[in-house]
Amino acid sequence: MTLLALEHVDKTYYRGGRHRLRVLRDVALDVDAGELVAVVADPTAGKTTLLRIAAGLEPPDGGTVRLVGEPLPATNDPDPRIALVTRAPPPRETMTMRMLDLVAIPLLEQMSLAKAHRRVTPMLEALGVGDLSSATWVELSDAERVAIRIAQAVVRKPLLLLVDDVMAGLGIAHVDAVLGCLRHAADADRTAVLMTAGSLEETARVDTLYSLSAGSLVAMSTHERGQVFDFPAERR
Image 1 (cartoon, rainbow, N blue to C red):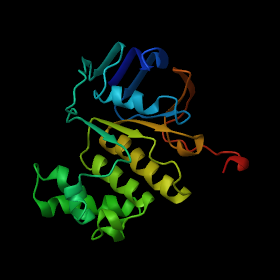
Image 2: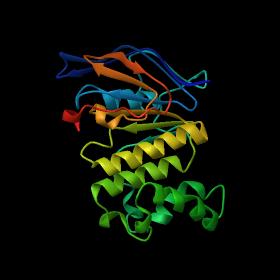
Image 3: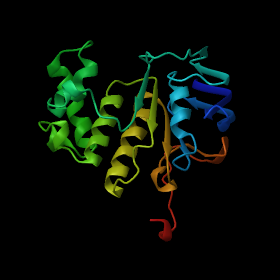
């Protein structure tokens, strides 16, 4: 079942009232339940714009965004069925919380804190940050913060998970842990996952791969679900 559908999406920014920068051109993209899709592009190619439009946080200039077959309106209030992961820090008031509690916050409307902790703990272990359950945000490295952000989103079991180029600069072990968590969310929870990346090395285990260049989205490969790419030695 298709959970996210972008149909003929266009987006242009204007600078100084005259200069036009068309970042998305007639973009069409479907992400099914249980599918992990990656879009590879340069830093200024429009990856963040693509995900913000997919999240309903920014309107396209043309085209339609559909979530579970229904048009997704662009508002400042994120749809609760969608989780968007970025490198932005959490709210200031949560920075002194221990990580176990911070990741558990989205679950507290559904279950007790103790039960939320039991769900969060194995996820932190899988992401390689299980020993940081009692740490605070300011004590974490950049890679550890990315892992926490992924855990916060995945623990909610959203219908649609959007991941905005969070693995740039991470080591191989951290990239592998994050990809493993995204793969598990797609396979076990049937979450539709759309991620952006700056390099092919960050897209192992994806189902479908696209490139975004000059505003156009082009399919690079579609392969067996869960396959791990064996990259040439010179790209490692």
